[in-house]
Amino acid sequence: MIFYIPNGILLPIMEVDVMRHRLRAIRKALKLNQTEFGKRIGLVQTAISTLELGANPISNKNVKLICTAFNVNEDWLRAGKGEMFNDSPHLQEFCDILWTLTPESQECLLIVARELLNVQKKLLGKTDGEDSSSCTTELSKDSGGQ
Image (cartoon, rainbow, N blue to C red; front, side, top):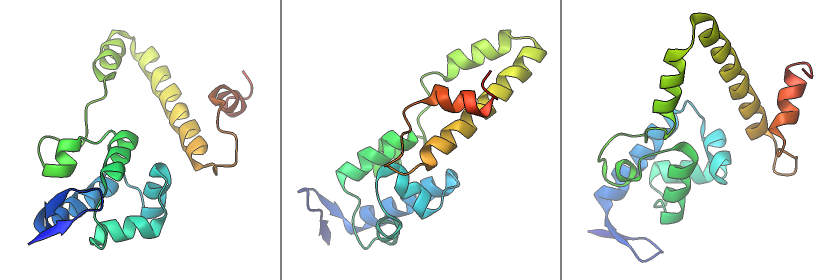
């Protein structure tokens, strides 16, 4: 038995079923609820729910959005090949820098990284109508303008 996807691709039902489980696994690994996950890719909670339940197939467009927004390995999402997430292209450089720093500087870097994460969460939490273009402004506000 096959399942027709509107973009013209035919997939076995089993493949669609497994993909929905992988989608849920991604969301759980990121520790996001359906609303938060959907917001990052422009979908509402009910759309994520129907994808995870298998009521609707995951379109190629949504696969691309998921992989881009969450650094997911597309081969893993589609076919279970490889790791769930792609390595960051900056990971090796970051680690090289980290290990050349003194312990005190490593602690400072960790503080800055945590602050950047908080700023990112605030920016991603804003509604589409709000201006989220200025990371510098947010950093200045959060660090007391210094």
